[in-house]
Length: 262
Image 1 (cartoon, rainbow, N blue to C red):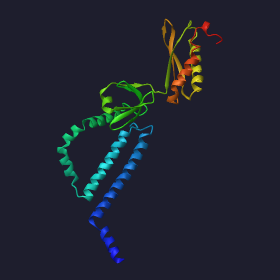
Image 2: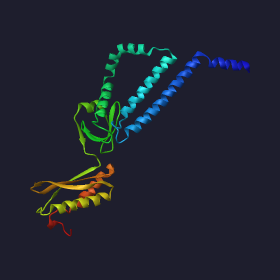
Image 3: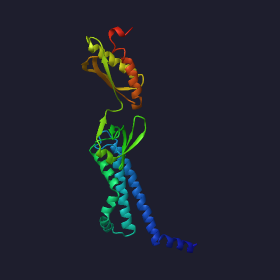
Image 4: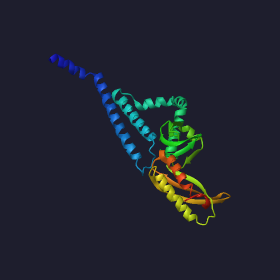
């Protein structure tokens, strides 16, 4: 029994066991710190008053920095590696490495630019390189958008930086253009009727978060041109709400003689 205890003690005190245990402890602490940093940043970026958009690129960079620091501590503590000298040695081959990862670096810088400058943020409705959709996330390599067909489109960040980008109205914003025919004697009443009809029709489909507002923009040979805008809570229901509103205001835009019982 005593002999077994001595063997166990000798095993525990062996250099390789101490090194292995140190590696496990340092990597475990690194993983724990990475988890806390990720959770903290995700909560911070999701706040309404956050100075940065809630893109995962910042979380990925912070996580990578924590792990790099953890590996450096592990190499210096467990294997007596001179990290400063290793970094200096790598600097010589840095040019070759950067050339090999040119696209990756370009995408990383592009992602940081569009995020830090708040050019795009998750939830924005954009059009770039003939692709249209709502931004889902900006990572260190690409931007993910969901198009109107509910398809996920992956766009490299470098493409966004090199092409014209158009910010479109939110997908929850519904705009309906109309032309009112008639003598234009009481356009205020017509506008109020259009707003009420849109509110009732769209409200039967989904919640209306911004009341309809109808305005007239010009006089044409066909009548009085205008548009009505409102917001709904569900982007997926915006098309159905628009259809219901168009059907509701159609009788109002007709001349008096064509409205029938209305």
